[in-house]
Each structure stands twice: as structure tokens, then as C-alpha cells.
Length: 290
Figure 1 (cartoon, rainbow, N blue to C red):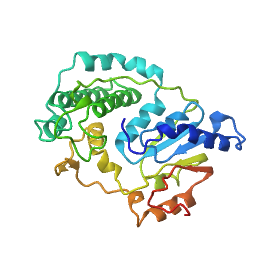
Figure 2 (figure 1 turned 135 degrees about the horizontal axis):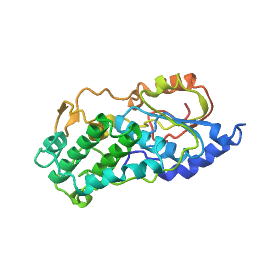
Figure 3 (figure 1 turned 180 degrees about the vertical axis):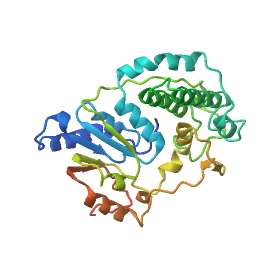
Figure 4 (figure 1 turned 60 degrees about the vertical axis):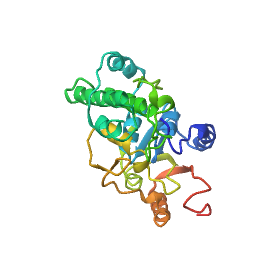
């Protein structure tokens, strides 16, 4: 997934810092609790799932679904879901659903080609139907759901964010969507995934290493990735504006210059962890001396 603020390139550095913390914890590695409260695309949480018990959280549903797949699935789920993905790729017809009606060329917003939008509609419809009919377990549901999300993101006609779409289809957006599987690591413990506000959750969890990667500027992820939420939730929301954003979503206080310092102080004061590791840009809303 193309993701704003992804820590993929910083994983080595983050690992070095976390390893130093680990050396001071008198526990076996698989008993250490690593908590990632702003998990986003799940790169950091997934990196440590074969070493620690991971507690991961995010406020956005597309992220929650991604975390459920990355942290609670393994190679066995990939094997079980392969026939479903094969059907979606080779046998499934498209549908003129909500994505086609609102986010395709025919729908007046060129996020996707008509054919790709129809396939996204059909894929989401199939995954939800199989889950509601109890033909998919919860783990299989998130695996297949994330395959649709990843496939849609790869053929989106955007620059990476969903705050705008390109007027002409270019590059990968012209290619037919492909629903791919995932290469998943095995976990060393049962991981916990949450969907909610970090400041609320930190009062209910505890552990050894708390990793924080909060928003550091005024961009709102709920707006930047609104279409991924709509695809993942399959809820046909009320939308508005040229870009078709979901109506009614309140922005994160972490992206507000007036509110962010209070949010940070409250979270840290509420945390019950031995170590705190934080990623934060030096070009951010909070001053570094805080």
C-alpha cells in the first residue's frame, strides 16, 4: 500500500533502538509486549510479530483490517484463501456497485477505470457475502478483504493519496486489477488488534515497549485515504464534493496545532510501559524540545 509516513525505510533504525530497549528487559522475547498505537500500514507492528507479542491500533478501518491480516494470519490462511483469490481473478464478473457508480469514469470521478471499479465492487461483495454466510472465518475474511484493498490501491488513478484523482488514466491505473495473496510471517504470540483512539486505548493496555508514530502535520488520514475506508467497510456512505469524501468524519486532534501537545502529554502520562520509542519528524506540529 502506498502510504504517507510509512516507516519501511526506517525499520532498521527502529529495530536498533527497540533492540537496545529489549536488552534491558528481563523477559524471554516472546513474553515482551510491544505496542504500536498509531500503526497505519502495519509495517512496524508486522516487523516485530515474530519476536514479540504485538498490540496494534489505528483509528482508520482500512488500517484495522490491514493489521488484522498482517498480525493474525500466517501461511496457513494464505493456503486456505488461494481458491477464493483464483476465482476472483479468473472467473468473477464485475458489478456496477457503489465504487463503479461514484469513483469510476462513468461515475464522474476517475479514481478507477470502469472495469477495475466493477471488479472492486464484485470482490468486496463476494468477500462480505461469504463471511456473512459463515463460509469464511474472521481471519480468512480479513485476508481476502485486504487483497481487494491492496489490488485497488495499486490501480488507483492518484498520486498516492485519495484527496484527488488524475483526469486521465496513466501508468498502473490502466492495468487490470489483480487480487494477490500475502507472504506472512508466523507470530510468536497471540497478537491484539484494536480500532480506536490511541489516548483511550493506552489507559486499557500495558506492556514493555510503547512505540508511537502519530501524525506530525495537519494532514488528516481519514480524508487522505477515505476511499480505502469506503472499500473496506462496504457501507455505501453519504459522500460529497468533487473528490467524493465521506461525510461526517471528525479529524484527529493529533493533526491540530492547538490540540496536539495536550494529546501527547495526556497519552504519555497515561502510559503504563517500561520504554517509549517515538518516531516524529523535526518538521512537525510539536516542538522537539517538548
